[in-house]
Length: 361
Image (cartoon, rainbow, N blue to C red; front, top):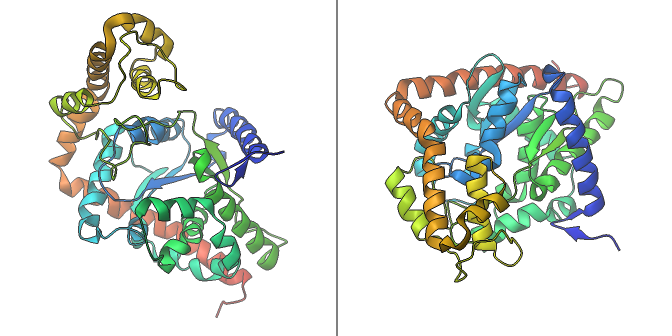
């Protein structure tokens, strides 16, 4: 019997993984053939889980020459957070994190808030007519987000979140989206909307690509509690903006176990394995090799090794971050320029949509 996890069958996941590998190979040869859509919600500053899980990969793709749209999903904060008073500040902090990590805005790389691209949001109405309530209700990712946010009632914005995400991806004709396995249902909804739109309104000349997943190679990074995914809301994260002393203090509180002999055993020693994986991500050594070096040094040596490795890895980023924090006019200009370029793309897409839907006047 086929195993289902988070609404995605193993067969579907394996097929997506195979396509992702082929795309990775082709990107090296034909980077301009692709357009990446990626981004974050401005609910706070980025942490090391974001850095190792997605940010480094965005930098890599943009430096390979892949056109990259980095979305700051400010409207989506309203679906499950009462933090609208901090959206503007959080947006600017995200930009600082992106730039400090190595993202370089330019002709092929833009950063923008989607509230500044009204033409993209206009796609929401036709897209909503292409999906049913039942299809929205079945989306496992939305169910998990509702549960994680502890929502007792669900507003329509949260319910239709996958459709809004389709607008974000398709307005710029994004054809690859870096995601983890748990986000595949969202992307499948975007692919479904693109396919149905093309079949219904423009079968001879498809308007939208069906975007493919670029699956992350980095394993899920647990928080310092060792039991849950690293998250701002769970208080188990190390932020990129933390000082070296703050980083040391946080790691000191990280959960390990009583066995002094350090081994890499994700199944039986998840907390220790997670810290070893973080060291590995910083140094490039295999986690088993890191464990062998620490040996009988116990949790104390493990934490000391991680503190030194992480602070060394993030030192250039943190230096650049301080410089950027002192340049608010530049950060604002990055967002305004990105918004203008995103709008240009959205206006052209909306013209195509109106044309094939017979709404031109």
